Length: 470
Image (tube, rainbow, N blue to C red; front, side, top):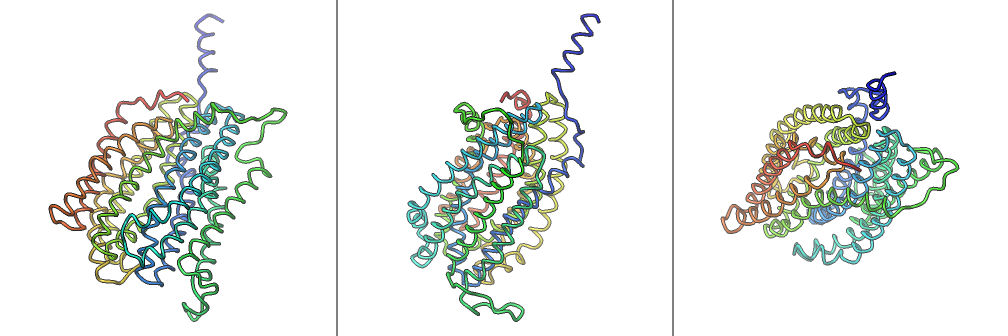
């Protein structure tokens, strides 16, 4: 064999390729279980809001205030979700399942520590968080205990998120899907019996209610369901050797360097996800100045938007997974193809959701609250955000590609610029000094989304994510 042949053989060994082609079918195989998993989380929040809606606008406003705070906290879980997914997917692409198992173990331990820290700090800070908005004593009295109970449930949620990421990165999104379906079914059953007194609500001739814990009952039901889901994840992982078999005859130890690697990748992704809801958290101070109806309208709109994240989450997780695996196999062309297919699908979805939310904005608000002031504030917001889908949807697979590659700093910077120097001051100025009212807030949010899309697209085109080393 001549020297050229040896070089070619060596190159073939050192440059593995994924065993499957990256096609729409492959994206679909990875995406639909993730989408169903996301739908269960979305349904859990929507069902909770639906039952709480029977208690009146004050209850809806209280849950809405807490919802944005909890979404900020959920962003912290991106440390273990994106950090774990990027590292595990890369190890799978490399064909190193032992290191994939080690990454999963570290993600789970880190998630438990973060979840406990968030629960402890959140429980203590709940009164200050709620009172920051100045929404009134009636809303505060309901929101504070609800938020405290919800913070406790974050411990189980964080661990479940870390294990979900590892399962999905391994190519097994179905196990998290099945567990999440079980969680939402349990929560759906518990909610009315925990929230209402006996016979307080009658549906189809059935008298619902049992403990009568009100809004707190909804938080307790969600926390119990989440704890059950976390236990299912742990049992499945230990008893069935999922998502990876434990290395035999090898002592597995925790490594500071592995935690550091995960934090280095996951922290920017977490900050990117937090930047938006945290700025909105401050923006709620402006929204609250326009009354309880504006708060309720904002909360209902955000909850309804969570529906469109169902398909997006699946497509974008598939893109992140395939990009990570492809780069692990040193197949940059495959990674780029995964992004292209995701871009096409997300753009079509964005146009479809734009039509639905814009055309049925009034009906969506009325499904949760019939108060005229809530409808008047919510309809313009839904319509403007519907138009933003035309910009936001094509951005998502680009961010997913960089996250899957472990190049998480550019999306973080784009999110920070769009939400802090742009959204916050612009929304404030339009709403109050210029007198546009709560509609000024909606306009500021729209502009920030367009701006973020432009920055992300420009950074993606540089192509530095393709050469990121993990």
